[in-house]
Image (cartoon, rainbow, N blue to C red; front, side, top):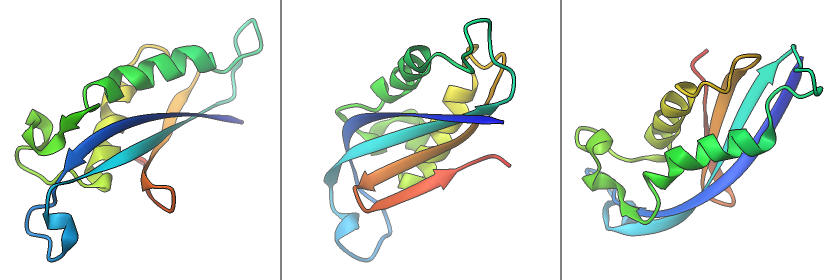
Length: 123
């Protein structure tokens, strides 16, 4: 079994409604996102997924979030844009990509700081 990871970044602001503390106030993060893909069948070039194509697909999803106030986006109208909810959203959107013919999206890892992250899988 092979496992590969690509990493990308975006910047966005949010607030956690109902939170008792500083995160209730409007603030921003330099978010980092890792996409982890698994599979055991390589293509004719010996690749599971082309890193470049995977990063392009990840960036398509992150471009929707970049330099935005996340609370205003449709997907976060009924739930807080926490790192957890962001990870699930990115996973669901990236899973729709057609690049996973020989592989499967295993996880999305969202860092809201270099020392704090969440991992989402649908397993």
